[in-house]
Image (cartoon, rainbow, N blue to C red; front, side, top):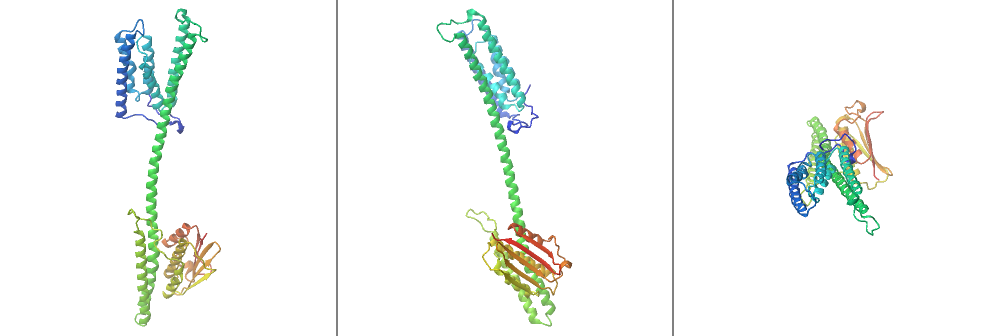
Length: 432
């Protein structure tokens, strides 16, 4: 009988399915030291009790020495084989008294430790309880037999005297109470130690899980930050590069016959390049911000673009060759900075798509509506519409970026060709 088995139960509160065994060399050394200390204590106690004359016919010295080893020796293996050690200790405890070995003090320590170890270290809780019940009931049966034997020998009973409770009754009751306290304490302390070990194990597991979760969260944050930076770069670079590409093509086509128009187009290219560089520098500067301890702070918004630059965006598209109107519906009012930035970026992406896909003669309209609890942005064009190379599912980076930005502020967006021709981007952004 050993204590290393793992139970097949499924009650997490009892720690089933988990084992404290096997233990390491440190625990084995501690058990060996404990066994040696108790062996020395039992030896000294046996000599002293023998000198006191505990028994009229004490056991020979070699029997006493054997019982000292039988009681203390198994404790050196108490955490390897808890239940086996408990059974051996109980048998040695009984044999020590039956053989009249003069020891009545440290003998109780060895049995207590053995019973405690079963409760504290056995992973098979059903077998642990069964073994302890068998040992404890066996010990109580022995106690009752000893009481009955004393009562059956009249000469062994003390004189009643004038006491209200007969001495032999008081002695018997006291023996029962002492054993109840003794075995109850061994049972309770063992179970408490097991419960504490299970709680510590669960806490360690949760600590490991939390550490892993923190690592996953940190990795996800890095990934999300990279995606956000990529989206910002796309917004900044795609619009201005598209504008520069359109103006450069226009300048090339009219360079010989209309030098002034070519110079104007090249001026737009220059302005767009300068603006793109400034926005990139501003975004990188925000990403490099650090706190007082030198830690890099997360970039809240690489760009400070807002609603005030929407007219400028429409004018730039007009300069690029696509007449773009801008109108505001409703009474203008302050809106959250995040909503303002998202609105501008969506408008910028939509205008960029007009420049890239709508065709040379397409016209665009940019409308901003102030609703009671929201802001609505609408960008339409009269271009290729369903024939354009734009996916209504938003599979491109531009559409994905617009959808992500709108979702981040709790809004909704509609992207797709119009029934009467052209293309539509309509975003509804809550402001409260």
